Structures are given as structure tokens and as C-alpha cells.
Length: 244
View 1: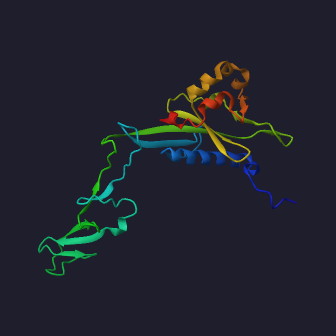
View 2 (view 1 turned 30 degrees about the horizontal axis):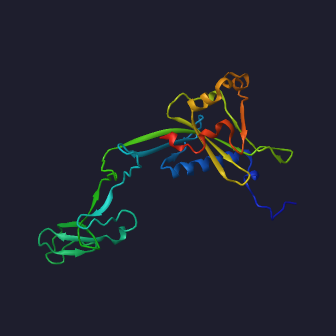
View 3 (view 1 turned 180 degrees about the horizontal axis):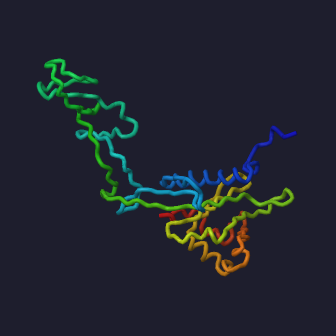
């Protein structure tokens, strides 16, 4: 009979579900770093396609949506203040101002009405402005990357922790593209996640002569490394800047 009081952890996930869980963890971590994350329609050793817009001059994240700003006082209505924009209309014939969804001027009955979104603070006109970076630049660039996720829990034997992670890598994972990266999601016994971020060239360089091993050629290679210091792979811990 199952113990109802036992706290469930990632150990309780089957292999398929844990793999998906690792991908979810990676996707949220990428979002923290400003990346938009998409899943391909089918899996060809690419789990995510990610992209972001950044300032061409300083590299900060770029907002492509226009800002709603008062021309007079500079109040920004873009995020949470939109409901406070006053729906003002001005009759082009008699210049009467009115509030609300009017179709005719109540004074002269003209249908020639001019929409003037109005600031609730100063009465100035609210307009849409293209985004500009804080550094003053108006130029941005778009970055695309492809990501393959590998996930691992702590290995165990006969119910005892081996204090190691294990990641399987195969020749077909070596996509020759400078925009392709691996993210290894490692979940420890406290359900805390750790991320190793590396390029294809990083992997090949760190593998060294092991790349020529028969086990790698036969799709049987498995990298085992310590849960305490991540072994020779520790140099890639949380190196999300590599994606830039």
C-alpha cells in the first residue's frame, strides 16, 4: 500500500515525463534570460528554437511593441494604465470636444469626428511611440538559436545514491551549426535544478580523445560526473551568456 504521507519528488516521474520536465525547467530558465521559446513541430534533435531582440549598440533586450505615451507630460500608459486613457473626440466642423463613443456631434450633428486619446493626468494627447533603448539607440537585431536539452537525475544503485549525473551523447547530436547549443538540466536529490550550457564545439573540445572512442561511435557513450562539482563539465555551469 503506497505511503500517502511521502512527499513526491522527480524520482517519481517516469523517464519520458522526467525528460519533458527537464525541458520545461530549461524553457523557464531561458525566459529569465530574455529568450522567447518555441517547440518545433517534430523533433530532429532540436528541442527548442529560441529568439530575442536586443539593442544593436548595448545588447540590452529590445521591446518591439510601441509605447503609449502622453505627448505633453510623458505619462506611460503602455502596461497597466490603458483603462485610464480618456476616449475624447473633437468635431472637425465646430471644434466641440466630447467624451465617449460618439458618432455624431451633439452640437452640429456632424459625423466628422476626430479621435484624440487623452491623458487623464494633464489632458494631453496620447500617442504611440516606437521603442528606443535607454542608451539612446533606435537600432536592434534579432538572434535565433536552436537548443537540445539533456536531462539527468542523480544516479542510484540498489536504492543508494551514486552521487553522479549521467548524460548520453551520440554522433547525431553533433549538429554543425554555430547557433546550436546543448543545455543539460541536472536535478539533484533536493529537486534543485542546475544547468550546463555549452556549444557543439565546447562539447567536442572537452571530450578530447574520447570522441574517437568506439562507445561514442556506437551510440553507447554516457558521461558520468559528480553531483558535487560536475567534474570537467563544471566550467559550463549556468553559462547562459554563451547563447548571446
